[in-house]
Amino acid sequence: MIAHEFTGKVALVTGGTRGIGNATARILAEGGAKVAITSRKAEAAEAAAAELSGITGGTVIGLAAHAGEPDAADEACARVRGEFGGLDILVNNAGTNPAYGPVLKQERSALEKTFAINALAPMNWVRAAVGHGLGERPGAAVVNVASIGAWTVEDGLGAYNASKAALLHVTKQLSRELAPQIRVNSVSPGVVRTKLAEALWSEHEPMVAAATPLGRIGEPDDVADVICFLAGAGARWITGADLVVDGGQLIGTAGM
Picture (cartoon, helix red, strand yellow):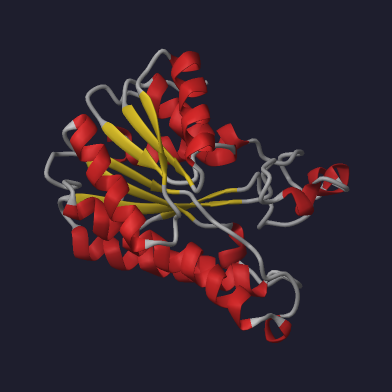
């Protein structure tokens, strides 16, 4: 496993109770950061935080916050600053995909929810984080979790992919607006073993693995390690970038 150093840092990870967000929170805590994770339900956030604290021996707290509610973002960031004295790292991991199928056949509510959570919410969380201290200390960073869907066209995933493409532009725009105090980058995962992506791999994992040049679907840690790289000092001269973490899935079917 890659060693990451975050001693003295404070991090907030949205959607941190499972999957990529949970793995990211664990690695941050293992590296010495004080970490807050969010979930819609307080019980889930607190249970996951307690488990992470036990695994890492670090300080992890769980906060109830709906990713799509600006007031919840503001309250969560205020709580983090009050609890830990500042905020250095924001990972916008929370996402959703209620709109599967042709774009023009989706209910308006599903389309609006997709863009609200995947594209608008990260902007609201960055605004809240900046309002509560992000960027006041050296080494501040934001990492947005996008998707390789932002780079391609797929049947059934048009709304989701468009929302993630919007997030890539948000990332680049904020990287200009917040420089030099805050670096803003994104990662674009491929098919990863998470609950959100379960429909893409659960019934045909061998086929997906065979079509992936590196021979398997991703694990949450594969992406979390890259998120933590972008959040850390090793990426100190990287901003406005998107790192694709997909085992080569965008390249296409493996040749051997």
